[in-house]
Length: 145
Image 1 (cartoon, rainbow, N blue to C red):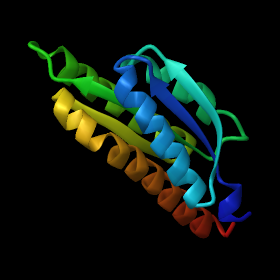
Image 2: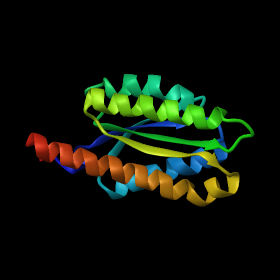
Image 3: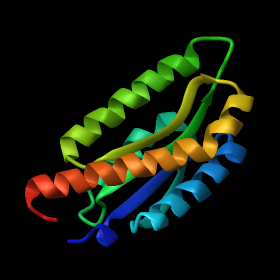
Image 4: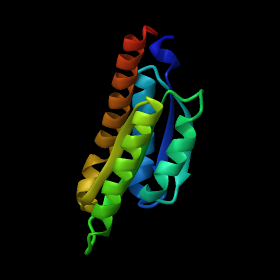
């Protein structure tokens, strides 16, 4: 199996749509530049809804990895920070369970809108690069390269 055969699903939050739409476009462009294929773009309400859909996607044999894209903004309470930790932990557990990489393209928690606007493309592209790098390493270790 070659790198061109890497099949990636994107799970993106609808919340903060302005930021996330730009992240999706950047992630798709980055995947293409690396010879990977985005086979689906799934929209969920927000970050908290990502682990369930990520679980279903990673269970599919046709998916080699997953990229999650979202922006958890700075709020007046600890809600975003707590949610961010819960989501990150759940996604890490899925990655270890399925032995498939997840590229974390979640800005925040605690980022301002200005910070998110500055980071949106970079975070999305870095998430795809991390996924592709880990997928390649796993393939090498499994003797699939």
